[in-house]
Structures are given as C-alpha cells and as structure tokens.
Amino acid sequence: MTQMQSTTSTFTASPSPRFEGTGLNLVAKRYVAEDHNPDGVTLIFFHCTGSHKEVFEPIIPDLLALKHPVEGKPIVREAWLLDNPAHGDASVYNDEALKRQEAGFTVEEWCECFKILYASGAFEGHTLIPIGHSVGATAIILATMPSALPPISFKSLILVEPSLITRAAWDEHLEQQEFALKTVSTMITKRRDTWKSRADARAYFEARIPWGSWDPRILDLFVQHALREVTVEENGQPVKKVTLCCTRLQEYTQYTNTEPHFVAADRVGTLDRSVAVHVILGEREDVVPEYCHDSVLELRPVASLQKVPDAGHFVVQENPDGLGVAIARILTGEAAPRAAL
Image (cartoon, helix red, strand yellow):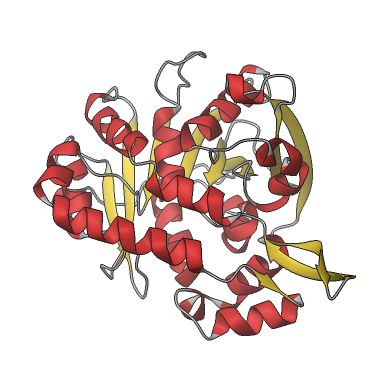
C-alpha cells in the first residue's frame, strides 16, 4: 500500500457578483505520496452533482503508486479532490452564503472558483490533468475558456461519463430530453432528504436506486461526507438529525441548468488539438443516452475511449476499481484511441 499524506484546505473565492462581500469557500483535499515525483503530473478531480470530493478516495492510492513503464519514477506528483461549493464539507462552510441566494449554485460558478484557486498560484509549476465526472466534466472544459479570468492550460482532460450533448442532438431528441429532465427534476423535489441518523440513512440508501448498486466503500463515504448534522424542531423540542449536504434546490439547479453543457460540448470541438481528450464511459447505457456521447465524440478525435464494465453513468460509484484501472491506462499510455476499439 502506498504511503501518503492528505491535507484539507479551504480557499475563499467570489465567483460572481452574487457572492461579493461574502465569498464562498472552496474546500480541497490534497494527497501526496511519500515517494512522490515533483516532475510528475497533478491530478485534479471534480465530482458529479449530489456527490462529494471523497468519492474518489478508493482509487487515489493506486494512482499515486503508478510508475513510469520505462523510467520507473512515479507518474503522479499529487492528487487534489475538490468539493463543489454547494456539496460535501464545502456546503457546511458556505451554508449561510448559499441560503441568501434565491437561485442555486451553478457549474459556471464552480469553474470560476477553481480558476480563482488556480490564479492564486496554488498550482504553480504543476502539470495539470483534471478528471471530471458528469457535471464535473463540464466544469473542467469550461475552465479552458476565457471568462472574467484567463483560461487554464491543461496537459490533457479525462472526461468520465460527461453530461454533455450538442444543441443539434438535444433538438433532434427534444421530446425525450425534456421528459427525462422533467422526470429527474420531479424526483429531486420530492426526494426524502432528512433521517434520524446516519445508520438510518444508510439503510434507506441501500434499498433504493441508484445507491443500492454502489460499491459498499462508496456508500460508506457518501453517508460520511454527503450528509451533515442539523437540528430540527419536533413537538416543540430540538432534535438532532442528518440531512443531505447538497440541498434539493442546489441539486435541482445543477440538473436543470442545461446551457453550460451545450457550451462545453461546443468547446470540445474547438479545443486546441495539442490537449489530449480522454473519455471513460460506463459499459451500461442508463442515465445518459448513447446519442449524447456520440454527439460530442463526433466533434473531434479523442486520444482514447474506454468503457468500464459493470457500470453505467455512476461509474465512479458503481465500479471505482474499474475506473481506477481506466485512468491508470491513460496515465501509462496504454489506453487505446477510439478507432482501435
């Protein structure tokens, strides 16, 4: 087992005028192996909606242990896991700031928070490879585009089950897309979000989709990091319970805010060809239809395309070991281009 150290840090950012004067806390966890290579690449992980940064923890030790097949040196310098500021630990730090907003936090604002962190010099001298799952993939693509802050240069991008679709494909399948969006939105607004204890919550998740299909380690991490303690009043008395870190409003907003996914899809086609784009999908088609992925894959040749067995859109949660193998194959140069599949 690779010996590594982890540290958690918070950074204050004001990604938009909505948060001027209060700012938001971007919470990051950094992992460094004892025998790390300062010339190696730095991996930065962006999770999906409703999740938390620690969801990637099961695959971090093996990635830090990867050695160059010829030189024998560690490939990875360090790994960073970032909370969306409306999720996980960050949601606790940002509770008051988020409550003061009538609209939910957006993926564009998450991207700007990361850009502010990058501009602070935190990654000076690092060679960056971001890894984004679902909406996290949208975030890292948006980071390559100019905004109030300059674009970020990455060595390559690893898109895991990206929630991207071109406008043309959306319009072509408009009825199906709108129905799916309405169904998900209704589920979110009616979903249970409070339990008497973490054990009670875990039992609830185990018996329901999608949590019931998750790797037990991932479910344990979800119960630990995607829930927080709250005090509610029952029969005139304060009672301690647990609730989701990502509120229903925040989750609803990130699912229904479709525009950034169109923008990010277009960006895939115009991104400098020197930046390698790798795609990892779940073998099972479930949440994101194949035509969504195809609409983006047709925009440019990808450096590699892999499909992880025993997994669908929630590949990070369902088969973390398989995902780790796929990422390792990219980092060691073993992943095949799409044409070879």
